[in-house]
Amino acid sequence: MLSRGALRAHLLAARLAGPVATSREESLRSYRLFAARDPRVTLGLDPEWAWGERDLIALMADKCGVSGDPDHVSGQDVIDPERTLSGLDAFAERLATVARHKGAVLIGTGHPHRLLGFYAELADALSAAGCLVLTPAQGRCIDITTRFGLRTYNLEYVRGVALVREPGVRETGCETGVHTHSPLPVRIALEGVAEAGSPVPELVIGDHGWVCGAGQLGFDAIGLADTDDPALFVGEAEGRVSVAVPLDDAVRSDYYRPLTRYVLNRACLSQ
Image 1: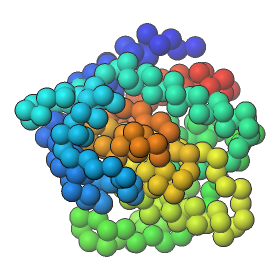
Image 2: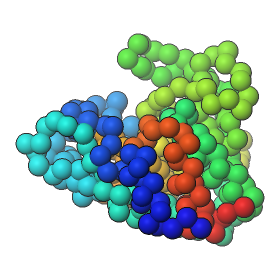
Image 3: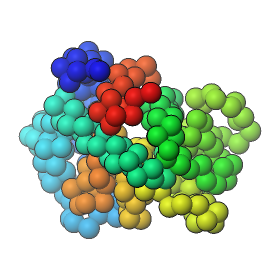
Image 4: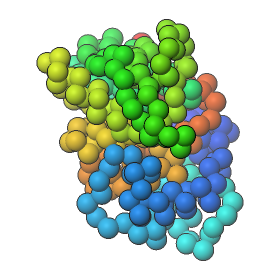
């Protein structure tokens, strides 16, 4: 079993925590946009509380370990690895609970190029434990507003993990997919669950709009989030996201493998 100390060292070496690639400028911009309720950063969450920029800085300092000084406006963000480890422990606890119940799960990512492998290993382990890994609304078209205008994508599944692809892409098993923050894919997937009469997911796992969109609809949701994704941490603070794990969500995909091993071992789901 990968020890907590070994994983802490890996987090720092891979820059998943400690000084990360996300800049302070990027994060502050996201906090300003969130305070203005810009849907590009609220990710499907409709906050109940009033969140100003300084409130968000204080929240992210508490949840992630970034600087709580509003006058700190440049440089690289810093994530406290202890907060990442505590988040992974809580994440693993939720996986263990759903596995004990053999509950249905829905897994999706807006970061398929980086995080597909992480989620696919979770899907394999949960399926082996007797959980139903849902794949609703396969192939459904979704219109998502992007910085390039309205784009139509297809909802697809790779190894039990939902992602969106451009129409015409049919590389089964390939990690090709679109980076998106939109909550529309999870909404479409959940509509597909209802239409098919499938079991309702006991847990939704993912990032970006997958977590916030599901949490906003009242589903138990857990996921990973970077320092420029305040929505997941606001959702956690307001009680609509069960677990938000702070880490850099855009490093090399193989750097997440030790996290997978750690989480599955903690959840007693190692195969």
